[in-house]
Length: 97
Image: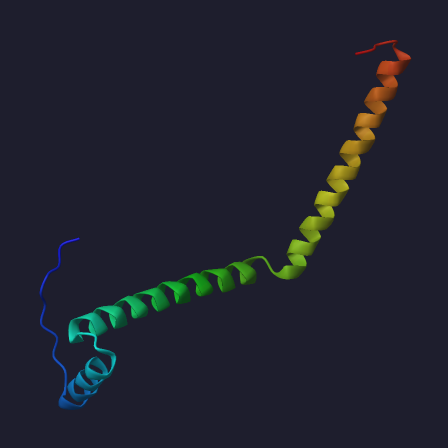
């Protein structure tokens, strides 16, 4: 990916802290700034995902999920009973597969 140069304005305190970090870690200013930006973007995306999950749980609360699980269990039981009845009807009709 091609890099594009941009100008970032920093106050003297931030620049001093950045230079100190660069000297202590032997990492360039640019690399530190790039990593800080990528960390910020990743954190922002994670926050968006967390927000979406929270909204989802608000829309369908846990209790509602439990109710859906109960309906799923009932549906499975009804399907099992229907299949048993169909098997019995086929047996009564003399149908074998």
